[in-house]
Length: 113
Image 1 (cartoon, rainbow, N blue to C red):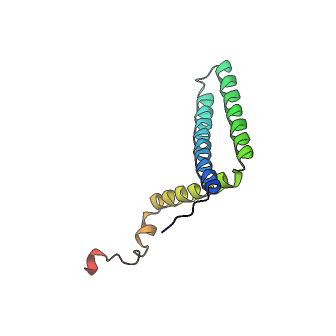
Image 2: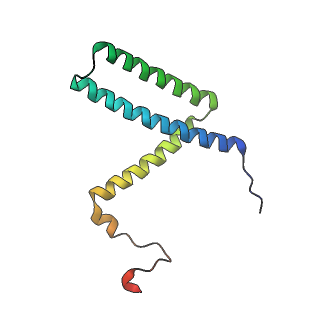
Image 3: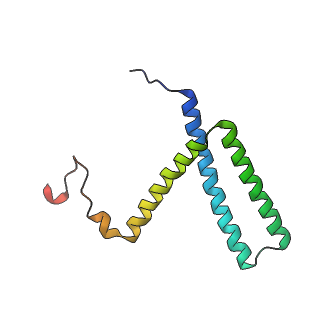
């Protein structure tokens, strides 16, 4: 069996995943920065440097996405990850809902054995 791999699509997929992960880390850093600013633990100079660093990171990410033509790939990865996170959070908030879900085909329940 021969596996036909389109190198361009593979490159875009992997690079899209990497950039999506960098964006998620950036978002977490922004939230931490906001918490630290609101908590008063940063000086004016530190807030300015942090803001500039985050803006530079945003610009670099946007430039990479545009240069590589991976904006849609990154969006697709982010949307997929958002769906997974939403599902996990929903299962924690409403555990009774996922306990009612039918078992996948081919898996017998303990009571049916």
